[in-house]
Length: 197
Image (cartoon, rainbow, N blue to C red; front, top):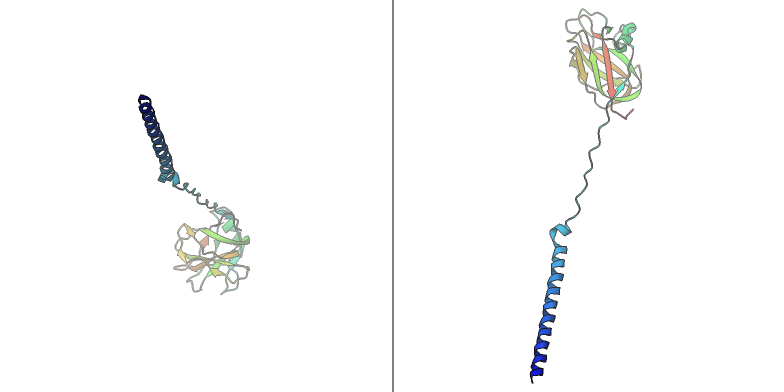
């Protein structure tokens, strides 16, 4: 009788141990599932952001003064001084004829970029501030030339930002010489977008 009780107690103990092991195993497995389903475990990898491309540095354009441009006159406008506007010396200049009053739509200084380009910046230096000028561009030295900037009253150094227009020939177009006299263009420098031609 005593032996039967011992066996019964041992059986119950084994049963309890089995249940306890099963419960612990379930909790352990459940914990693993919860961890796998946790937000930190299922969060997508952070997206890599690309740095914006660095804009290419503007490239200088070597301009060469060709001649004056006078479509309403004899076609000439102090042609012999045109090269002085691109010689790198601000003390020399292309000058217009002397006008007692400026009665024309304009006269210009014709420059050659050497090949078709799209200019992004043109800087004009003058010893006659107050003169009104604009930048024009064309494919042929005889024209036609398309305005790519608005006219500005020049200061000693004036920067123009042309609209995108491809062309080889550039004209500094003098719209007005207030009070008459001459207009002087001492230096013209230009740039194009880097990497473009």
